[in-house]
Amino acid sequence: MLSDGCDILIVGGGPAGSSCAWGLRDSGLDVLILDQATFPRDKVCAGWITPAVAELLDLDLAEYQKSHVLQPITRFRTGIIGGAAVQTEYAQTVSYGIRRCEFDAYLLNRCGARTRLGEKFSSLERIENGWLVNGCLQAKVIIGAGGHFCPVARWLNPEKRAEHSVVLAQETEFSLTPEQAKNCCVQPERPELYFSPDLRGYGWCFLKDGFLNVGIGREGEKNLSSVRDEFVQFLDYEGRIPREILEKFKGHAYRLYGLAKRTIMDDGILLIGDAAGLASPQSGEGIRPAIESGLMAADVLQRWQKGYDKAQLQEYQQKILDRFGPWPDKPAESIVPAPLRQFLGRHLMSTHWFTRNILLGRWFLQQHLPPLVRN
Ligand SMILES: Cc1cc2nc3c(=O)[nH]c(=O)nc-3n(C[C@H](O)[C@H](O)[C@H](O)COP(=O)(O)OP(=O)(O)OC[C@H]3O[C@@H](n4cnc5c(N)ncnc54)[C@H](O)[C@@H]3O)c2cc1C
Image 1: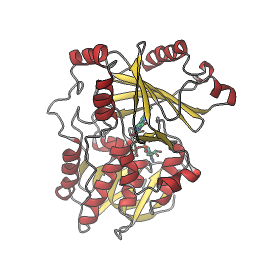
Image 2: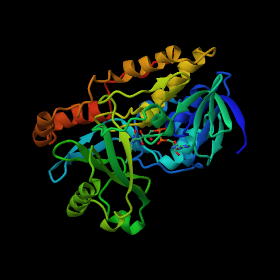
Image 3: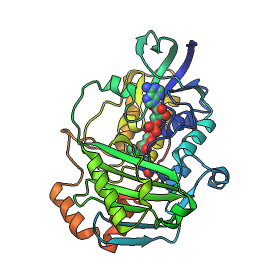
Image 4: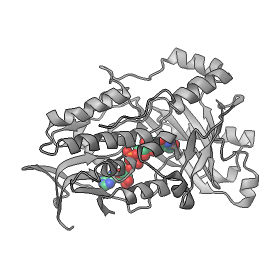
């Protein structure tokens, strides 16, 4: 491998890593992104983003749409698996559907950083004035942006513990044939979300410009495949999608924010995105927190160009806590207590008021959350 040196080495070129690099594009710092994948690469994901994401990154959506899938969302069909569904409509676009293979490559291409792609992070050593990665890359600061299985996050959090905050999820995305499209009830502007009765997880069907994305995720679930099979049977029984397509699910995981403490920084090192465990505890939205944390890290790093010790990077941790809320002293099992979850599941999910104002407005669209102020 060729040896190289930089100011900031970002491990992972997903939305967190590319946003951090984009935030540093005019800083004068030499930023290098290392990713084991070559782009475009796929990422297991439903591919749903809120408008805040486009605003945070100054994305020109009209331009993006010319050569990429961008599906406006104006309605939702929601319900409990096995129960009746509720439809909620909006007067304007409240979210978009993207394909991660396109979106992530687009963000990485325009972020302005140097890249080393197709190169896996394999070792990390402290050296004078910084770090040595893979025995050949020197950097003053390391940013762990390698997603849920980020090796830098593991280096900072070596202890293994069973965690309720981890959601296991499976997803499949494919292009429908004209025949399959005729047999598919999912409408592009109206994703479908179906919750398990205990509200510990949900499944979705999402059609984006002829690409159908179906998946399910559940907190702390060891045996996700049987939960997935029940969901598939439900979709089949309801005749929502052509059954033969539901065979190639891919699995991944993410950590929900706010249920357990996590080390997210130390001298010359910090974590962003899924590596820091920032996904929204109610909806699992992880792209917006990944981008926000990447930009927060960029703001802190540009300001402290003279040194990056723990005391200085503490400001990044404080920004995370201010934005996403405090961590509990003891690991918690869930944000919503079990009896309340059962009640919500059984009684409220079928009401229009709860669905619009709490489930969609607050938990999924986070309409109460003010835009991130950068400084
Ligand atoms: C099934 C599923 C559905 C989801 N749906 C949504 C959704 O609809 N909307 C939403 O907002 N969020 C969703 N999420 C969450 C979202 O996908 C993540 O929060 C988001 O991808 C986090 O971005 P990131 O940049 O932190 O990590 P990632 O996107 O995972 O990127 C990490 C990068 O690091 C690289 N990497 C990893 N290890 C190494 C290594 N050893 N060496 C070099 N490179 C490495 C990887 O190749 C990858 O490119 C979903 C998650 C799952 C599992």
